[in-house]
Length: 245
Image 1 (tube, rainbow, N blue to C red):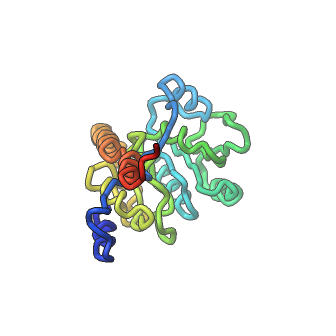
Image 2: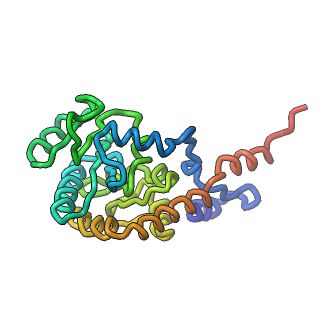
């Protein structure tokens, strides 16, 4: 970002040879996205009814699944309809997550036990790898993992933003510090101070579809405005590359 550019200049990099091209991480290649029929089919596969908001735990870390399960339970008790889709960062934590779910009363299903639950359940765990992108397309709002204490650093919020999904994250997003700040400023994301803030924040959002839509639109605008860093970087490098005959 601008701060990095200024640091290079302070270190003596010639200004004429220095240019801010943007963040390469934003140039995400998605390929074909799910159409509405495919989304409906995937929802049916995981036992979620169409039209009910889906809360996504995106690349969650220890403690975050428990916070999301607790928030979901309280939301349902208060009459707020929703479903929880957990995609843990490390699929090998499935036994740990299984024990967590066995200790509470809401029905649940792990994808590794079979793609489709025997009966519809409010909690579905995608304890697989390589499927986060398709599941993100089902989300009404996504919590970005590795951001609630004692976890720190953050998983990426970029793909959710690129797909127009509103995001929440905890206090420590040092791995994506500038991007998370930009998403907050754009109105696409909300930073919560701790796990206790998860429930009231979700209650407010799920009761306000217009606000969720505004956040979704803001996420899409942010992503579109920040695309092109790869092309700009290559063009800049070309200026210093001798033309081959």
